[in-house]
Amino acid sequence: MSVSIPRNSRRRADLIMIAVFAAACALLWYLDFPGQPAAPAEGKKYPARVLETDNSAFRQTGLLLRGEQRLKVEILSGDRKAEIFDAVNLLRSQMDLDKVFQPGDTAWVSVPFNSEAGRDTINAQDHYQVSKALLLFCLFGVLLLLFGGLTGAKAALSFVFACLVVWKIVVPACLCGADAVAVCLAAVCALSAAIIFLVAGLTKKGLAAFAGTVLGVLASCIMAWVFTYLFKVNGAVMPFSQALLYSGYEFLDLSKLFIGALFLSSSGAVMDLSMDVAAGMWEVLKENPSISRRRLCAAGMSIGRSVVGTMTTTLLLAYSGGYLTLMMAFAANGVSVEDFINNPYVCAETVKTIVGSFGLVLVAPFTAVAGAFIFSGKGGAAPQRNL
Image 1 (cartoon, rainbow, N blue to C red):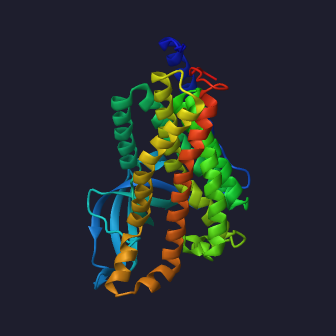
Image 2 (cartoon, rainbow, N blue to C red):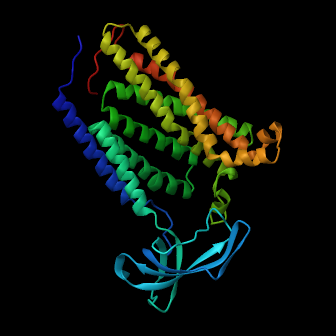
Image 3 (spheres, rainbow, N blue to C red):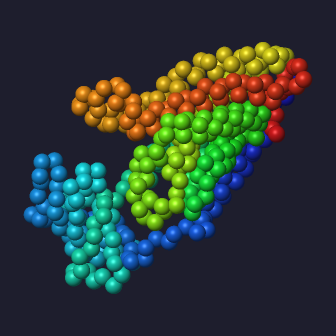
């Protein structure tokens, strides 16, 4: 006989979880990791509206731009609001970093201390994207709320919490020389617990999903370690890794950073699949409370088999889509299949995709077995209740 949780109690528990994680997000926002380098204090940065542009000082050679673009900008906020400066936008013939401003654009400018408006020239560093990013996130949050209600609000909060953990803990800890594999593994386990229990509540369904996720991530971590060294993958294939070393962090182990990034990037898909299997098993249990542990485990395996096929392809497309231009460059130069696979960048992506897929495949049986023991007693099924 199943025992249902009163709706008001579930709602109260959800609101408590939301309040706890909102407070955790606030604490993380103001967290300064010990040993983290301070930002340069040569000036302040502000958003500024571009009033005028002068393109006479730069030239175009083929597809590349070189020289400088002169601007007149008006500071939009802060203690220097409404001040008008001359600014310069340096073009370095780098298509990925160069930008050209138009009147009406909002630029992100650096104003040195003691600079005087109308006399000193400041640096226009980039387009100002913060307001647009906030708008995009707000639209995403509204969509979650409209579709998921309270569950959508928890999903949005878990998204913010994950971003803050990565930016405020994982990145500074790795910069300080902590073992990147241990840091990423701890972060994944903490994030998995936070996100799963925030969304699913402190229930047996959430516990089963968490157990499957942790086992899947541990399997991915072990295989990532083995195959990274077996394939002799150089962590320098990661973007900006060499620039990081030359910035005073030559003590960093790029191979461990690659391993940590590998299972960190696939952990979201692993978490998703484990929740799918746990939720499916719970629905089976609700329909047949007397189901045996063996049959419940078999149902979880069947659910996992149905989802694994599309999830592994999703992971492949997610990784290959990020390197579409790399594949096009090889194809445009008539590179053979052997040369393509032996390229260090392609080799790194192969390891990342296959090892991530290993974790996805294994998380389904892990969750099925864990769920069969967590949901049921010695032989029969037990109803779901708060932990």
